[in-house]
Image (spheres, rainbow over the protein chains, first blue to last red):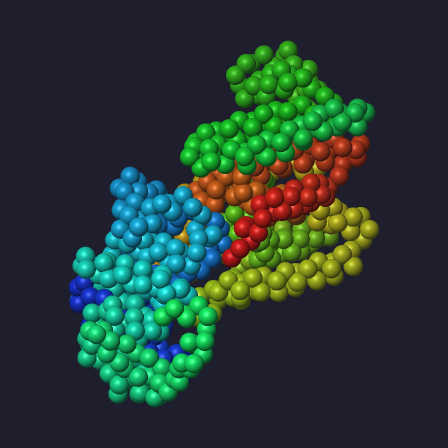
Length: 270
Length: 370
């Protein structure tokens, strides 16, 4: 589906991406992660054709994306940005309907079919009840859901998400990742970048790990996320634990002050 | 002169009515979201009503039936021209009608391009003069006034320099095939200040009469409006308006930001360039006919958004209609309030500022979140 081949990119002689290659299959949920400054966003921009890599190519279904026009590209790949305030108070419906843009005719008039797909997209991730609310006063989690619904309405084979859960509370993080899991199970490929290795371990089929020296590992998160790799990218600050059948990455060298916890009045019953 | 009385009789009530009506529209917002053609039809009828009402007003009050008769005799419905006094032809057909039509066209131009600029720059506080059109046009007009070398030189030079200023701004802001918004606005300020100081030089060296004319031009007004201006502005205003209305959905997408627009299949560079050129052409044409009229381009798209909805497919036509109504009302005040004529720029700011202030306060911070 998506294959990235030997991509190199430099900002003013500073190499950001060096010979990165990976492949993403149909219906796979892939987590892209790595420390700050490892080039996650740059790689994203290359895949979306926002910037042109210095060398290498990005292929989509076997075709180089250089050959896609903006509109064709948008029919194949959807992009979910981080939540942001739009300058005008559009409603949720209008926001989701914007996803239909690449499929509209010359006059950009959304028809009944577009409205139906918009409603389906909202139903699929359970935000139909928000349809007539203004987007700009929703909570961060709801806004992120709306942007994901917009990408679904775009009806593409691949969705790219830029840190979808970075600004959300724990409950919303789980809701979003579960929604992504459901979408991937329907045959849509997803590439999501995240700062949290736990999310990758819990929800993703495959992972791409970027370090400061380029691509470090690529593959099944169960196999890839080991103590060695964590030590390498996070410089000995994490421990990898097994919790029943799940992986858990926890901070290293943390002293839990038991006495304080017991003294704390609310936890007294346990 | 019955000008002063006429003002009190006609305008206090009609102006109150205008504001009460706008307030009513806000209350009926839910209705507005669902029934777009009805809203546009209602606004269009309001425009027609205001149009005929404003032609009646003035130092010589004319009956409604006489206005209709005179106009229809010229348009060719009732060829009974002989039954209408000559003075009516002069006042209605040669003076008031072109002036009112021109006010409508200028209103359409300025408010439509205001809406385009606000959408493209993702910023509700932008006005059509942001890229330096006004100062460029002012420089052109000042040149034309001081050196009146050829026919229509003031208008032509204003148009050319207005357009040129935006061209300079755009090329200054273009870095590696991209035009970031902040750079563009900064370049606009730079261009504006350069042309501003050039105007200053001309003003400083100009003769008294020329100086007076420049100052009047800078404040804007419809004093010299004639059919010639109307025929010049009409095609530009209509073609621009229609293309921009059709692009309403694209402006929605562009207001999301360059990267999102691109990922939604709308090329930001190409479309922004097209829309900004059109809006610039409309603004430059309007400015070259009537001088710099402040506030309309900033305030009207804002009010349109507040009383209806933020979707630009609706904001554009509502802005155009509201802008037209607003300018003919302001122009009628400008020519009837006192015996002499007041520059319209003064009226539009004086009336517009408190209204916008009221809208912003009553709607809370939401319009500026972003």
